[in-house]
Length: 62
Image: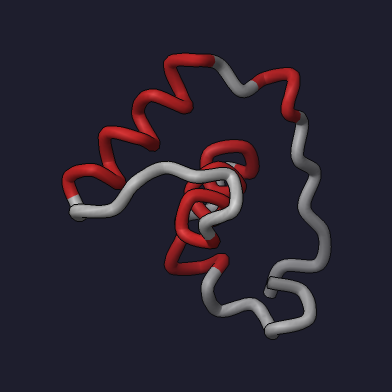
């Protein structure tokens, strides 16, 4: 169970964004700050929690 996430955007780099964009393109999707899948990958990268675990969060917390 995830009680709290600390997301430090200061640690996110251009390289991280490019890696997320590349991953999404491999899935035939595009990076957008408004796209929930993009947001999920950013949160995963910042928190160190894999997307599958984040997806298990209850809807109000997700």
